[in-house]
Image 1 (cartoon, rainbow, N blue to C red):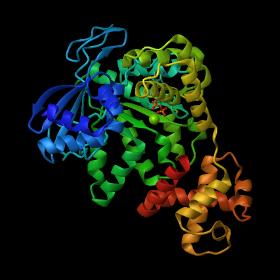
Image 2 (image 1 turned 120 degrees about the vertical axis):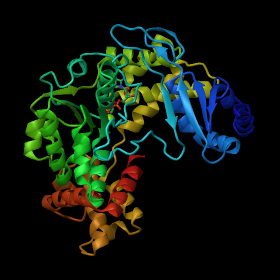
Image 3 (image 1 turned 135 degrees about the horizontal axis):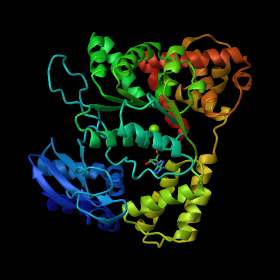
Length: 468
Ligand code: ADP
Ligand code: MG
């Protein structure tokens, strides 16, 4: 089956790309209509998923029919040395053997999603999918001054879930600094040490969605019940709950129940509790019961070790000079740091260029330029008006027509979100309004986007357009 797929793929992509990305793959097994293939690294898997998922799908569907499934098996690599096949045990300090890292990717559903979290109460032996990503571990979360407290608090929690004073543990910090990674690592480690414990990782956004659905379907109680039987609840990006009073309410009850029963709660947020807006006071005060640990931007040395570790795990060699060049110039966050290195590897492997300092300079320049670009209020108004097919002057006009008011409020909302301008200056630039109008607009957008599906779509579409 696989060799048929390969020959189809070979005919349809560049020879160089075929050589780089398909020749190293090994077919492992075929069970029913699920084909397992082994890839050399996680990076490799992500690359395939990002660039070749379509052609893989076509090839596989031809061979196995519409229900074809592809399972990636990532060859496990020990962080500290010798590559090992994934089934072998990796002895390392106090960790239990790492399990196979199958990433099961049904085609119609790109990221592995929570299947059906609702379990009918009363059925025993419920098995809850923990939704953890096994590749986010403490081992590959490199320690530095910027994250020492958070990382070690995470380790302490994982050693004794619910049994430390870090309950809840709240990890906060800016974009791309490792909150999600650390949140998973805590869960993964707990699952390793206490396999019998029920661990659940979920984003606050999804939690909210599930809650809303449960209300619609009249099973709010099942929802609450489901969350109350969890031993370790990890909620990512709780800032998302801001302004969503219903969800905050239900979370408050779940939190209290878990806490009283000695269960562990781990939360992440892009802000410190004191800076969170539109979160009920009683919830904020709960957040402060445990420990709030900040992730800061890593210093140069930590950036270098993060990069080296990543290269090592992906099996790529790169001269120190180049690694240091990248680490020196990309300072804002780890995600960008990794992004730059991945482009560098990709560029060199596609163009068969050696990775030189000049190539590194080109790529780093591009990254730095892209991230420095701040959108202007004019640009935001233009994008929003285009989206709703009106002129900027209409958007700014005094009319109270509903769809124009909405467009105007969206422009204000994004101006607040994406620029550093004050409320007053946003108001004056968007048709001479005062700061209270802008504030009201931001609140309205927040509210509408949590209650009105169509409106939420506007917000998401525009956010995408503006972040390009
Ligand atoms: P956040 O959730 O804060 O936006 P992520 O957890 O998604 O950030 O991290 C972004 C990327 O950076 C991930 O690929 C993560 O593995 C990596 N990363 C962040 N901090 C570290 C670290 N200290 N060591 C290794 N990788 C890190
Ligand atoms: Mg995150």
